[in-house]
Image (cartoon, rainbow, N blue to C red; front, side, top):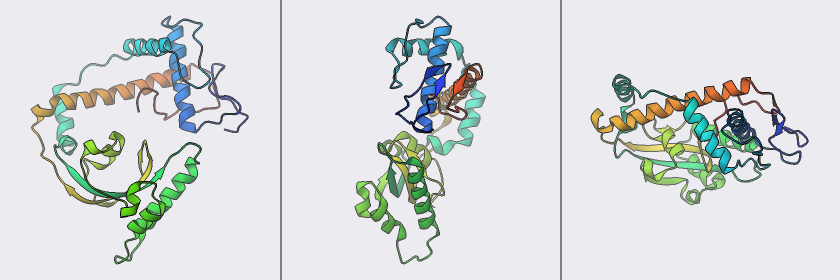
Length: 257
């Protein structure tokens, strides 16, 4: 989007001409505005509730959206059989005490950074450390010292032994419950930025009995079903709306991060 373009949902602007938002931020605003307008349409929010120019909705709008979603998205609890099948297929996810020794190269996302260029730099670094053939030359440590925005750069990116509780949840999901060792073939995204990650060692945890984690399994399945249903509802609203300047297909919803 150029600086002069303004995205809109049913005529309501999502940004100002002098504020060019990143694609995902614009999608988030579009999803939130669709829900805000749906709440007004259903009589759950006063018609005079106005959108904020900075994308932050009112407390009344937030409460109305919560009520709307409670009414529109009603999901049955997962069956015992579904929970058992999920547990059998993902036992490592529910292991207790799993530890991973790793190092990383962090490309931090900061205000004003060119995310596309940052991703290109991170991908180039990932390919470089994965393809470097000289075993006597610790390329990963060199690149970490040169490129990483984490204090661990001084130690070649080494973070030591970690448990999932030591990491941001979105980072832990990409690291724990897997069997991969070595430089991961993908960038790991977190709230801090983009990570090139090398798993050095894994210490498997203890796999609990199904009955011990049945509640956690059910919550995981319920959350997955809710995310799917919420995205479908957003897409339904989008199909009935006039949207300009933003494509919300594949967007994360504003309530699911």
